[in-house]
Length: 99
Image: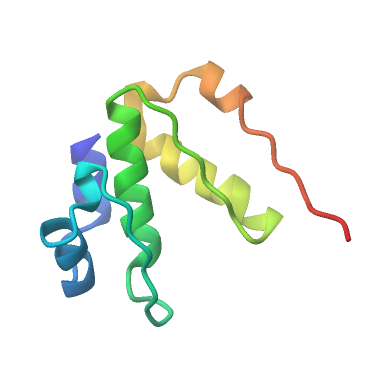
Protein backbone atom coordinates (compact mmCIF):
# COMPACT_ATOMS: atom_id res chain seq x y z
CA UNK A 1 0.00 0.00 0.00
CA UNK A 2 2.82 2.40 0.81
CA UNK A 3 4.31 1.92 -2.64
CA UNK A 4 0.98 2.73 -4.30
CA UNK A 5 0.62 5.92 -2.24
CA UNK A 6 4.23 6.94 -2.78
CA UNK A 7 3.59 6.85 -6.52
CA UNK A 8 0.48 9.02 -6.10
CA UNK A 9 1.86 11.46 -3.52
CA UNK A 10 5.44 12.60 -4.09
CA UNK A 11 5.38 14.78 -0.97
CA UNK A 12 3.06 16.26 1.64
CA UNK A 13 2.27 19.95 1.84
CA UNK A 14 2.59 22.12 4.98
CA UNK A 15 -1.06 21.63 5.99
CA UNK A 16 -0.72 17.85 5.81
CA UNK A 17 2.61 17.75 7.66
CA UNK A 18 1.19 19.97 10.43
CA UNK A 19 -1.93 17.81 10.78
CA UNK A 20 0.19 14.68 11.07
CA UNK A 21 3.04 15.95 13.24
CA UNK A 22 1.37 18.55 15.46
CA UNK A 23 -2.25 17.38 15.65
CA UNK A 24 -1.75 13.60 15.53
CA UNK A 25 -4.25 12.80 12.81
CA UNK A 26 -2.52 9.46 12.16
CA UNK A 27 -2.50 8.71 15.88
CA UNK A 28 -6.30 8.66 16.07
CA UNK A 29 -6.79 12.27 17.12
CA UNK A 30 -9.87 14.10 15.84
CA UNK A 31 -9.30 17.14 13.67
CA UNK A 32 -11.56 19.56 11.85
CA UNK A 33 -9.76 21.14 8.90
CA UNK A 34 -10.97 24.32 7.25
CA UNK A 35 -8.79 25.34 4.33
CA UNK A 36 -9.11 26.55 0.73
CA UNK A 37 -9.93 24.28 -2.20
CA UNK A 38 -7.01 22.07 -3.33
CA UNK A 39 -5.17 22.51 -0.05
CA UNK A 40 -4.96 18.79 0.79
CA UNK A 41 -7.94 18.28 3.12
CA UNK A 42 -9.22 15.19 1.35
CA UNK A 43 -5.79 13.58 1.43
CA UNK A 44 -5.69 14.00 5.22
CA UNK A 45 -8.94 12.11 5.59
CA UNK A 46 -7.80 9.41 3.19
CA UNK A 47 -4.50 8.96 5.04
CA UNK A 48 -6.26 8.62 8.39
CA UNK A 49 -8.86 6.22 6.98
CA UNK A 50 -6.30 4.06 5.21
CA UNK A 51 -4.23 3.83 8.38
CA UNK A 52 -7.35 2.51 10.09
CA UNK A 53 -7.95 0.05 7.26
CA UNK A 54 -4.39 -1.27 7.61
CA UNK A 55 -5.18 -1.82 11.31
CA UNK A 56 -8.30 -3.78 10.25
CA UNK A 57 -10.65 -1.05 11.45
CA UNK A 58 -13.59 0.41 9.56
CA UNK A 59 -13.51 3.60 7.54
CA UNK A 60 -16.42 5.66 6.28
CA UNK A 61 -16.19 7.95 3.27
CA UNK A 62 -18.90 10.45 2.43
CA UNK A 63 -18.90 12.10 -0.98
CA UNK A 64 -21.05 15.04 -2.00
CA UNK A 65 -21.74 13.75 -5.50
CA UNK A 66 -22.74 10.27 -6.62
CA UNK A 67 -20.51 10.67 -9.68
CA UNK A 68 -17.44 10.82 -7.43
CA UNK A 69 -18.16 7.50 -5.72
CA UNK A 70 -17.01 5.12 -8.49
CA UNK A 71 -13.88 7.14 -9.24
CA UNK A 72 -12.88 7.43 -5.59
CA UNK A 73 -13.69 3.78 -4.92
CA UNK A 74 -11.40 2.63 -7.72
CA UNK A 75 -8.66 4.98 -6.52
CA UNK A 76 -8.88 3.78 -2.90
CA UNK A 77 -9.06 0.11 -3.88
CA UNK A 78 -5.92 0.62 -5.95
CA UNK A 79 -4.18 2.19 -2.97
CA UNK A 80 -5.12 -0.58 -0.55
CA UNK A 81 -3.76 -3.36 -2.77
CA UNK A 82 -4.29 -6.78 -1.16
CA UNK A 83 -6.55 -5.30 1.53
CA UNK A 84 -9.16 -4.55 -1.12
CA UNK A 85 -11.07 -7.81 -1.06
CA UNK A 86 -14.10 -8.62 -3.15
CA UNK A 87 -16.16 -8.42 0.04
CA UNK A 88 -15.18 -4.79 0.64
CA UNK A 89 -16.18 -3.93 -2.91
CA UNK A 90 -19.61 -5.45 -2.33
CA UNK A 91 -20.17 -3.44 0.84
CA UNK A 92 -20.07 -0.12 -1.01
CA UNK A 93 -23.60 1.16 -1.43
CA UNK A 94 -23.86 4.56 -3.10
CA UNK A 95 -27.00 6.35 -2.00
CA UNK A 96 -28.50 9.73 -2.69
CA UNK A 97 -30.43 11.95 -0.35
CA UNK A 98 -33.81 13.13 -1.60
CA UNK A 99 -35.46 16.14 -0.03
